[in-house]
Length: 239
Image 1 (tube, rainbow, N blue to C red):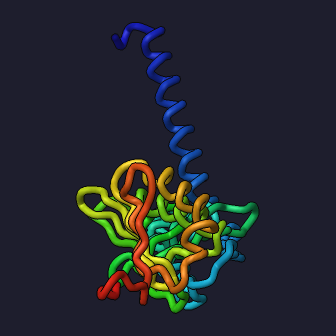
Image 2: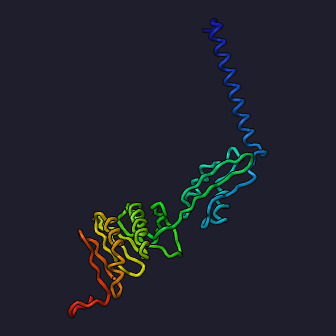
Image 3: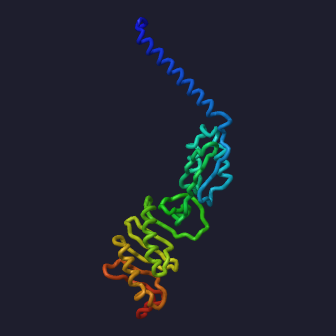
């Protein structure tokens, strides 16, 4: 091989190219670490209500070491997304010396159990809220389904001035709701939206005309529903 000029030329050219590449990498590394490219500004954007300045400063101090080019944005993103009210974070470089942290917080829709909250996407997260919120209850993994049904139930009942306070689905997928006046509505398992819409359509000419407050409404009938009214008497029986 040492007598092969063409092969020697190829080896020489390859060696030179590798040396140049290594030199360029070394220079790029040096340039990236220049003080000239230090991060001068970090801005946090988004509709933020729960993430505090102290939390932001702690993450910036611990996770965003380095320059504009070398700061570990992935580590900062992971740290922010561990905060209780943070749903999603995007950390971006903004030339020439600014980092932008876009924060999307959870927006609570309801309570799940004693400590968890449900956001508007049907996702459960840990958090505390003093707001008056409806309550959801169901089997593990039914968060999205219950959220979707709640929205449908609430939209239907708002048309007749009623508001949902509690939604429950059983292991057998039987649905019930409690209104803010304490009335319980049993919806059953199948065709629950159609049953509720039929009830809403008939409400003004039926339940709304009853004397006394309805305490329990059962929609689990093929062609109608039953109503239990507080104080209503039948013979010698008060229900």
